[in-house]
Length: 230
Image (tube, rainbow, N blue to C red):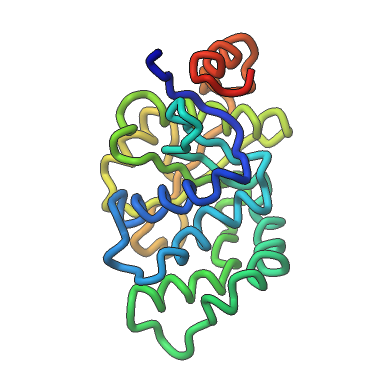
């Protein structure tokens, strides 16, 4: 029987898959393996802390066999997340990724410096969009509607928590990603000195959370077709 990909909540057994997805999409949407000798660095920044601190807002695209091939994750409250990142997450990874001394000279040092500055996520211009997110899909699963399904699940979960708006940051040079966000109704949020980034935001309303394991009868059908839990 042909397996059907579907969106479901994150499980602890997905951790390695999340890390792989992050690494393979962290270089402006492409594979970052050649940039960072330690494959744990980018996941420690952009994936694992969210799954650890906010698992209820972490969703994966299951390829139908139980393997995660994409994810969306984030936080409902960026300020609280920053506090938890420093108090809870950083102590877990500091031994592996100690804070560099002086000005960063390599991509690894630059990203490690970011790891130790979670307060960079707090910008006054983003206060009206307190939640934020990251979304990534392995290349074979892109441009097939799965990103919209992941985003729908995430925005629905935020809306159910009473969160009204969300933001994200992306490399301005990543034009395919920008086209995707434009189609989903994201708009530019002007911030002072954004550097190489563009900040986008939108309401948590308006993207239907269809096809994910949590959306009623359709979810049950998807799980059954995938041979997963019913």
